View (tube, rainbow, N blue to C red):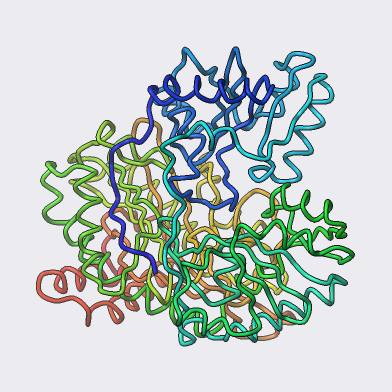
Length: 612
């Protein structure tokens, strides 16, 4: 099971990485007869968080961001990042070695088409590219008159002589009381879906899907209890799990039973090639081009369809939903203690972002059930909070200064659920503008909490509800409104989401999504209000004709009343706030005491009837 990993605030990487390591890679490329090599951020498992041994982009460039890519040629190099990392990449990647390029507008494919020289041979590791991305790369390579060459062994792995060992964290069963369904039943369900789709088997490469399917949890990456492994599930529900045997305890082997064969991960290629003559379902969004190569090379017929585990995993059963409720109540007590601290000691102006993040982590660590943070805490004061995905470091650390706002986005991993919450708190007296903008964000949050919607509605169709109060005043935010959340799995889970970007996945009962509209004033402040909520059947409306769904709020912690402009709230919005705070009081008050309990009582007093 995952171990508690404290957040660090030093910045990994730096220009010296490129100076030291680019020559080592170029030496390997010369041995292979290659003119260059493609280095995506993604690893073999396409996880959000990478184990240290798979931080290849960091090793070659010194850039530690969560998205990016690089291309290293024998006489030039380029690094690609999106708008979140334009400043960070210049601090970490050596500009004398790397040209700074745009990941979204150009990317590796665009660079190849416009910058590669006719006749060059550029290598790639098929395990690190999706079939769709590799197809685009090959099209652009053909136009440029160059050759893309698949390598059997990644030359970075060869050049990286002090590469960390692969993680070998113990894998444990997820108790049935939290899973809500045994893995034999899950495998039978998935097998039926595979057979119904006219396939003989499905390849499962996404670690969250493997963890859910087999009711297991691991600790191979930080911030998510995932085992790094792969699997093939047959249409009869039997399966093969490709995993390092040393990770499995006797208890876990017994839990998996006789219908799950265990093979070392090194045999995954053989397992794929053994599917000769069979139709094999593969998800092109999660499986690598290497998986396709092995299946095609072995004579299998590849069927491109969504991972059959993805939607059943997203639609939580009652045990998973109840576990999430309890995890949020437990976590809500910790958050309440922290919010009390912010409203008292942290008002001094002497507390900085790192101290605040450490304080929150220390409070959470008092919970014996805590297994890990669910992501690195976003602790943003003053203008830093205007970066929606800001990560504090020793270099960027600012004080929680009087007259400013403090934004904290954090979460925890518990055996029964995963949490994610954002609160914005005034330090000293907020300005009228801050209160107005906070209230507009809050109105959007409330609208998305209260909505009832017909069965079949997607998150894209609901997104405007959270943005409308901002749009009406000429404002917006540049991130999604809501992401899916796992059940003691990844804090970011698909396929459902609430965002402007088109998404065809209808929201279903049991799906957990975040509700997190925001506003960010450059060099000024940042505002976000985030709760997690679960899709539930809604009571029939008098005279209504359609089956409706709604949301139940899971997150339990006060929303700061000192930032609300009561003039801007409707009676229905005031009623929602009071009902929410009443539930927070009921759930959390028994778990806190003394000054914190007194503070909570005041923090959840009704707004209705209050003087604007």
